[in-house]
Image (cartoon, rainbow, N blue to C red; front, top):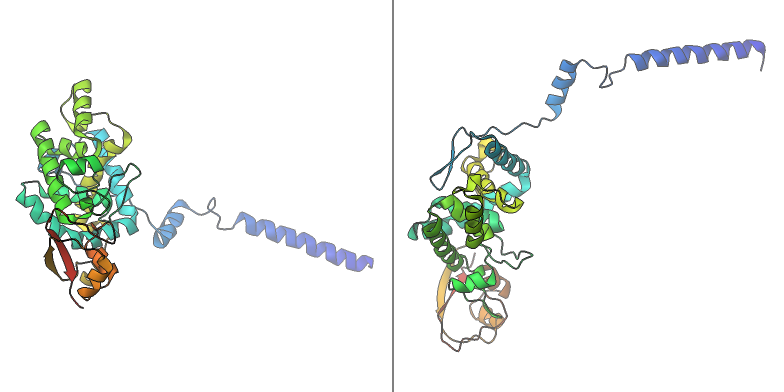
Length: 308
């Protein structure tokens, strides 16, 4: 390479380095963008807001002491979690439309405050799930407690998964708890951790309110989560949830039949009623096996979906 060409090449390299340094110094990196410009541009792309809490709150007619810092922080956590866990809460809204019309009249029949429908919702999401500890069904009853409250649980039938019967059992449990604690809030907490444990902690800590108890993390969050779900579902658009009426779930129309005899094969039984076994199980999830022995001639009520 000639001296002249080497000189030209060196000049180009020097000019390129100077230009690069100039651009780097004046580039729109976060460090160099004015705070106002950066904030405004980011706002138009994506924004996350703190959730405004109601000024006054209640559960089952009992006031929530939202003015206390510890209570406010606890309730704020549940509002944030359940507002920004959009898929879960939207499913709650959809399923509530399906199940609340069945649960609400039963709560009213037993004089249980309507707010307890949200307890069922957070317990199971209105799915027939089984917890790691063995609690099962819409109201998440343990096997022993279910039997204590009149639910049949065996290898063929599990009435923890019968919506109406398990709701009635839950009402009786909650009424018994209220008779002990004279507080619906403590009754709700007892539903999570047991009446004896709540009573033990009240005696040990020498207090008489759920909001003054120091509890394990699950029970400490339990009532606050119910309250948050209550307020979000009571005014979903306020918290950013939008849907059309046909987006919500609803029960299919069905007829009921009463059976007091053994059913040796529920698949054959389904075909005799012009439905699939799958449809029978979806409408009657309390059927735990493919047969139903019934030597005692107990009356079972089956829901048979109507043809669409």
